[in-house]
Amino acid sequence: MYITGMILHPIAIADPPLRSSYGLHAPYALRTIVELKTSDGITGIAETYGGEGPLEGLEAARPHVIGMDPFQLTRLFRQLAGGGEVAADVAGGRSQTYLVPGENPLDRPNRTFAAIEVACLDIIGKAVGKPVCDLLGGRARDEVSYSAYLFYKHAGGGGLGDDAREDEFGEVLDPASTVRECRQMVDQYGFREIKLKGGVLDPDTEIATIRALREEFGAAYPLRIDPNCAWGIETSIQVGRALRQELSDGGYLEDPCATLEGMGEVRRRLLEEGNDTPLASNVAVTHFADLTTARDLDAVQIVLSDPHYWGGLRQLQALARVCEVLRMGLSMHSNSHLGVSLMAMTHAAAASPHLTYACDTHYPWQTATDEVVAGGRIQFVNGCVRIPDTPGLGVELDYDQVARGRERYEKIPFRKRDDEAEMRKHVDPNWRRILPRW
Ligand code: GKR
Ligand code: MG
Image 1: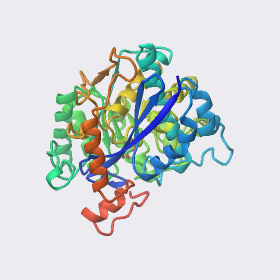
Image 2 (image 1 turned 30 degrees about the vertical axis):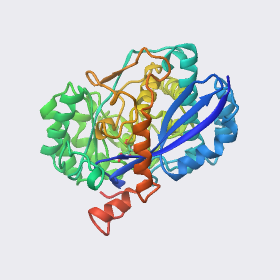
Image 3 (image 1 turned 90 degrees about the vertical axis):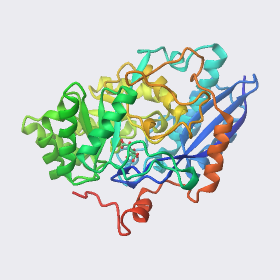
Image 4 (image 1 turned 135 degrees about the vertical axis):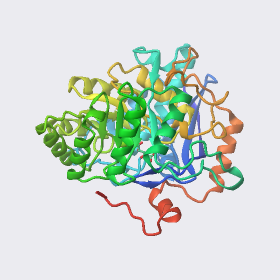
């Protein structure tokens, strides 16, 4: 069996006006759906970042992909991602502090490989009649737990004009409305861990938000807050101090400030006060080369994995094992995505025994109108996605929905995520991403 065709579908999906330290989400998020066709008539699918950069990366890989045996992924990884070798000047220099996720040029080979790997695993699963997680050595769990990913947001459900989506959650710009957003999400999806995207309102209001969530949901719902480096070291310590109780009961403080050195200092000073709140990162640790520095500085106790940019499902398993050996916790990061990505994340998580937290997902922020998976949205039960019995990823494409996503992509003027520009357009004409802001 060999690959005879690669079809790339650039799509746009409605996205609500969510806030973060990066700025504001645009009314549409960009994704790419990848289809690989084989000589045996099998189609494998994957989903990855969207827009021009990711498409260029995939196009550049085409000559390696066409004609390849989908089982020979190690060779492809070496061709695209350099076999995971780490140039000395790259170690520690890959931080995503100043880049929106999906735009780090150093991670492009890993992102490209990951999309092709997922589609190949989907093919192999279909060829041998097994779900993807069972190709990765077998599952450690039959269902994967996700967290309620809360955002401060402006009014609006995403999309534009006649294509606007219903605003399910309304405006959320204070503690009370965040509690309401969380209640809605928990009731609808059954999530049992909670993540707040911070770095948006002043730290006192974000502290009050976490406290209000704790009061409403109790200690049975671990809490995490992620300001994406919006705070300086002193503010990070103040927040860590103020939320010591709330964040240490199975939760964490994620990327409070920039750089591993900064996080190392926050950790050291909190520990001196007897505060053992773990620090997590998907900004300062994005590559295997970052792990030893993170460990040596004791800067990060929990790594947020993500198959999309860590180099796919098998690299994620390797990351899980390294974290276990280094005695670091493991969680999972997400970006705006649809059901194909959700299933790849779920299979990766199911086959990684050392996953110590519920995974992040933006899935509740997208709607059935944009879903490209046949049969509609993936169901969550008690906050979990079950591994389906069907071979491969367990989902197929709805080609009419893919075509609608492509039409939306053609209509919108941008080809790259730019949350700063959106912020200037809709909220404050002078807005700039200043780090640290507080
Ligand atoms: O969607 O605005 C967002 C998030 O801030 C996202 O871009 C981050 O990558 O979810 C992410 C995170 O945990 O840092
Ligand atoms: Mg994060």
